[in-house]
Length: 285
Ligand code: IPD
Ligand code: CA
Ligand code: CA
Image (cartoon, helix red, strand yellow):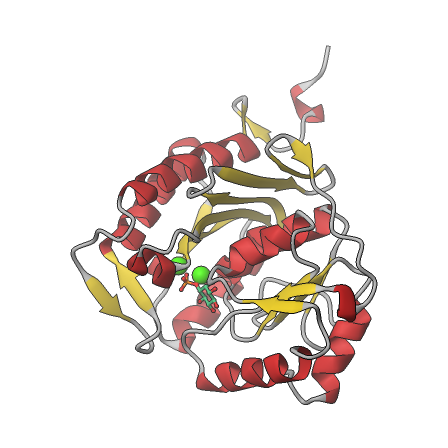
């Protein structure tokens, strides 16, 4: 008979991953029913940084569902962290130190959601002492759920994911995003687009960092980079990419940690060339 202690990530017969999947699906379904329909639209750190009552409601729903199963776990959600840098630093320190910390972006792609552009996601990760052990990204528009567990691979629609095989930038489809809050980050990203545009097959910017990461994991994109992200944009996606055989570093090639805000993710094969081009053109932070 299998002992409970031999089954990783199981508490009271409810696995962390199963709870993350159910929670993301439930929140995503509700978000989708509200696409483009909301009552209050507010700006946070800049005119590009949007929040609606649906972002806040979805985060509350996710927090409640997670705490129903795991009341002792800590929670870091985008809409619960203050805008001031001290609140941000404190939240990251908490995430690095907590025994179990859920890291959640209730709607990654709020701008798309606001405009009724059906490309956004729910991102839920679980970190154990600062290491991400579960990552779930749900795309309600396509009803696609991307799931990874540390050491156990990553799946979409029941199929194991594998990153793409391109070995050169000239064969690569890559993605980036336009950071919402830091002008400095925006400028560096624009420089990166200038450096890469003529060297790659093409560039996509579809407005959800978590989905861009999921697409790298699924082999639909060869790589993704963006400057100025937050842990809730990345935590789940990083595990999807690494468990699918890809590589995630900062812009200087240093390994991922929850503190990382400037990301370079790829199928591994193009990583060094990708990083070198950005560095040579001064498009790194
Ligand atoms: C944003 C999206 C977007 C990226 C921005 C993020 P939000 O998240 O991931 O793709 O370019 O940098 O802030 O604000 O929609 O949760
Ligand atoms: Ca986000
Ligand atoms: Ca968000």
